Image (cartoon, rainbow, N blue to C red):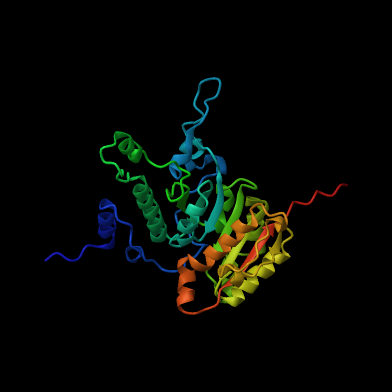
Length: 326
């Protein structure tokens, strides 16, 4: 008698049926050693990253040079992508897990490209498959109200524009080790926000070097984030929260944004757009993001079920100081 189908077969069956993937077929160890060789693919520079394959609805042909020759060369390691994007990625969810935050943010920011970055193979595959399924669902025509109306039928068959909330064309995921290769993906000052949600606490002192926040890594975040941009952090581990706050406050490129996370989560915060204080995003967007990181990530929901505490801190990227003269 044949045994039960393995996880791979069940994943493929769900995909063929057009169903959303199930997490139980993509489970993996919660932690990955960022210093191990994970056989990752990454561009040598941001210019070589083929974003069009991740956001096809925003892709456009690149203008050809005047001599009529293609921009690409034979060496695939240095070949430029054939297509470019009409806009660039602006938000990165580092360690996105099963993508709860990405899917929550996508309808609120249809004009913004968001990227999840995750080191675990199976978890990345889950997010990619769910994005694919959600896009396919949003592209399915809705039955017209007037069945006899050809115009209504024609309109229903047209796929939604890329910037329609709920089309999920504005999110994607890549498998990456951001501790090693973040500058390979993003240009200087490209991002307006980075999310660090429930990162691995690495409790042992000898493991602290593997934490996603450090003076060195904060400098890389400062490179990728534009002045006024934000870094959102959340954890249920107080020691890690204090570690992240200490390291960001010590870094000359960041300052902490004053906020009351509990009031924001309850919708009781008094929002004043005139008090943005140099933020690259509006106060309302910031508070919406704070609410979502507390409620929509898988770890956040788990902490809520266990009645644990969530420690939130947001940091603003400061303007670069002028280089002192001789």
